Amino acid sequence: ASLGSSEAERLCAVLRDLQSSGTAIVYVSHRLKEIETLADRAAVLRDGRTAGVLHRGEISRDRLVQLMVGRPITPAAARDSTRGAAAPTENAAARLRVERIRTGRYPAADVSLDVHAGEVLGVAGLIGAGRSELAEAIWGVGTRAGGRLLLDDEPLAIDSPRDAIRAGICLVPEDRRGRGVVGAMSVRENLTLPALGSYARLGIVRRAAETRAAAEIATALAVKAPSIEA
Image (tube, rainbow, N blue to C red; front, side):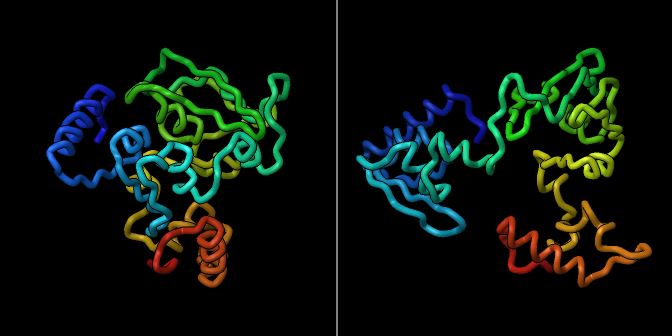
C-alpha cells in the first residue's frame, strides 16, 4: 500500500508484536528497509522463480538487490549501463533541450531542462505537480501552451506522438495497462503498432514482416508472454 513513513512504522510495530506472540508472518514488499528490519528469512523471486534465500544475519540491501536483478550493482556497473556513451559533463552540449515549456494544465508556469548524451534525468514531484503533463507535452500529447524543443540544437516540431516517434523520442506511460497497450490486441500488434507503417504496403499490413519484427523485439526485450499472439 502507499503508506507514509510514520504509517509504515506503525505497521511494523504491529508485526513485531504479532511476531513476539509466536505468529508466523509472510510479508511481501519492495521496501528493502522493512525486509532488513523485520525478516528472519528473506526469499527473493525473479522472473517467477526463487532467486535465493537469505537468513537473518545475511539480509542486507546490497544482497537483496543482487538477487533481484541477477548481478551485483556497483558504481562501475551503473556507468557501464550507458553502453559506452561518454559520461555527461557540465560543458558538454545537451542533446535534448526543453525551453520554457508550458502545459495546458499549468499555462502560467514554464519548465526548462537539458538532457545530455548518456544521461538519465529524473523529474520528481507530488501527485498533481505536473510531471506527467510535462512528459506528455514533450511527446505531443495534450495541449502545449508555449515553449519549444530542440534536439542537437535543431528545433523540433512535435504536435503529435507520431512526430515524436519520428524524432526518436518515446514515452513509457505511468499507467501502462490503461495507456501503454491496447488490451484487445495481441502482443504482436502492440509491439509493432508505434511503427506500423514499416510493415505495411499500400495501407495493408504485411503479416510476415510484422511477425518477424515482433518476434525479434519480444526476444530482445525478454517479453513475458506465452507467444506473441497472446
